[in-house]
Length: 428
Image 1: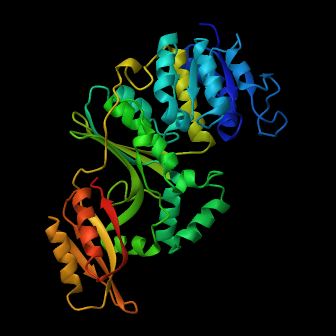
Image 2: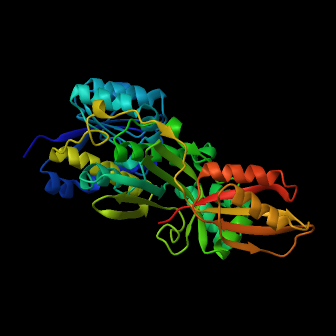
């Protein structure tokens, strides 16, 4: 049997404690599946005395994560600290510079520094693995880098933030306002310390940028992701979209087009009968379209101690087996900087607006759409509320540019009260 594989774990929060439990409880299983003993040499965290529900006294302690990363008795540095800079970045760089393999769950670190870290790992003969950084327990990184390596990927799409999906499904199921569902999620501890990371789409945008880099062979570029959170989604949108046969999801979509790489994370409508439309609660789902395989749908827990720690251990066991894959699926030096492109692939749109009670109001809206080259697929008008009437329109496929022109023209008609809500409809 080979020598033991020695871990140094930095960060003993929910996921770190979960990794400790697996290593302690699954010793025989991991030995049988890898032919090696997996052991923990040392750990590091902010508070040595905190009760984590799992003993840590058997392991050497380091107050400094960088010192842990440099230890001679650590083969794999496991970074579970979090954050795009600070100790997480410094310790990861220290481990790679020392030629050590790194396993991380840190999507922010990879979204902002992935290319530089991948090049460093490659130069030092180390591997950098991060299955747990995207969609928790769903093996989407491994699927893209290995199982679908023989495919040209045409689209990556998914619900990648469980908190947002929880809020949106609670709004629909319980008839809650956004503010009420937000407060409920906060009370259950689902929200990040900075809630905008969740509801503003930033957390999910980090994940999308990582998947796009792997899918399309490009340098990760989070700054090019178009971000819109779920704060503007109202209970009226939830109800009226359902009335038209759709559900609203915070949906990440990435495509490579002739204009460049589209990366968008925004509220979208999906058919209620589709896999994404059926997704409830805090579950994640990633949909991958490949030219050879067709469509692959991956669904599972996107967060939590068990699922995320499972993904971390999957990476560790692959290294124990001798599996060494380039960080983003191909040599870092071969990844190209993609030209960012605004999402402009033609799709149908959902429009909700309040029309003033004036003669010819609906005709003026239809004219604005027609002049922009947009045809109406379906339209529904509801009873008047005071002096306005709610109107829903589902268009045929059109571009964002054409829609923007139509919305600008509507604003000049004098019949639209306020700003219309416009959401993309993605076909699944």
